[in-house]
Image (cartoon, rainbow, N blue to C red; front, side):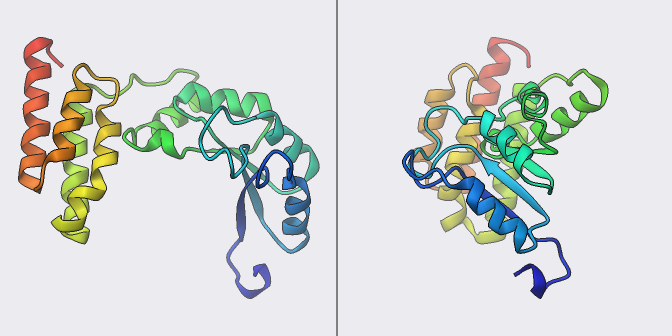
Length: 199
């Protein structure tokens, strides 16, 4: 594939199918031998899906094994996690996946931490909910309300995760049949949060 394009080809992989078939180093060597410009490792098996903890030590093993840049992935929930992965593994870059769902600020906050040694504060509840509503609007504008509202529910839950009363708000969002009702629930929830404590 690398020979068929001028663009760099990168490969993202896991450790293997399960604990009995850990073959990421063999796959990595094949990829590099066939022109991969960089490799990304999420150090869990396919069978694990997203359970347990990713084994960052395997990112370090990959980094020591191949000559191309290595991108680490897995369990990056805070800017400090990104810094820790770089420090512990020696990888060249970090990929933020699920941690950035519902907190798109994670990548920028991590960049500031890496550049300055100090991360900006996390977004306020108001920022989170207003951004969630804007994200919902954009998604619905892109694919329509019939598909857009239901497919955004999981993302909306991530925006409000950890806030007081989030479980009830999430349940209400999951029952809302329309864009308008979903946004009304979000804004009412924000109003409740602000009445309880200014955000």
